[in-house]
Image (cartoon, rainbow, N blue to C red; front, side, top):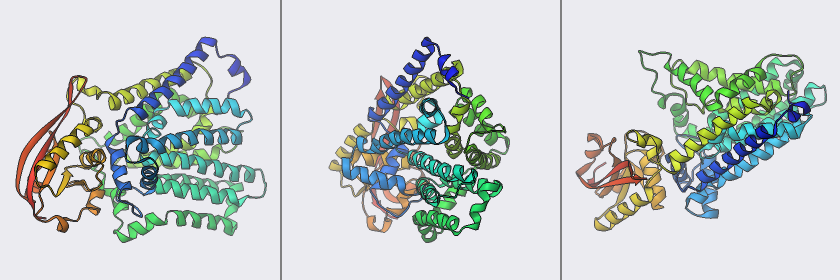
Length: 489
């Protein structure tokens, strides 16, 4: 536990290094926000926002709704794209302070540790910098956790329930689920906590607990409506279509990747404090049981799934958010904490350089496609617009959403579409019958190509331009532009 002696034992050099680490982390975050570059998925969600809908194919709608609001307030630019992550990051800090006051007798020291961990832990610093659904989910889950703590901690001390806190918590979990489906795991964890904790179990004797659940269902109504009207397209995508399965020769690759991702994106230096936090002990901090149930509900689910498919590092974010405020109870100001901060600084620097200056892999070979898609869209858009003026063009398309979305963002054209083979939200916007007979410019990249299926949808297809994207003298990506005539279907 952190005590006054822990604070007093911090040497001046270590205190200075910790402050410097925090300053570097804030500076790198600011650099990334102001770099003007974006990852392709951010542009994809922006394109969603320009086609307002009750929900969407890949994910729920809340991120698109907030980006639509930002576009109306700030305009069509990177500043509008990054406005919401900046606001939610500041709100995250405020909510973490409120949680510290709720669960700690020394809230200032508790918050200081929690803030450093939040700022330096790779999973949090990556998921709160980008205009992805995760940044909204993080804030809303923290708010939901705060309200669950306000409801259950007094209840476990035999005080009468204050149902308003449970209502607020369920609404927040509903809104978090409107950002990303896996947010529902916080609610599932809290439900299991209530089932297996005697003092909490009595809430099921009251109708107010079922009203709280009804509020959750009301908030996620847009998702329910969307899936009913699209034959559960989003649920099918999340549970089945996005998973390729594991290679038959290595059935443990998913498990290894899941565990490696947990260590890598929490940091090796946080595993010991995490183990201490999760270890059963008497006189545990108030509310820790809620966090543990949420942590294990999410972590064990993805552990099981890792035997059947690859698990991306951020899918278990609910578990890490739930346990974050309680890590401070078992972290000391020491060299282990400093090592964790250094690890976070290094990863933040790599991310900022890789997506803001030059893909690091370019130094050794070709850039990976995900990093390369953060560069050169202004010059690509300029060249495409020139070609549009030279030819009779009905529409512009990419061959993958990671091409179509950033190109559409750079051109400020919500009608740029995706004709690639992989399913995406673009299929819900593009009506082929309305474009029969039109000519198109199709943009792809060197490793993608058109493919016979796409070429067969036009009468002729001709390569008219190759756009080379350079940074720091290194070739980042080649993008090919094709003139396709007489669209058939």
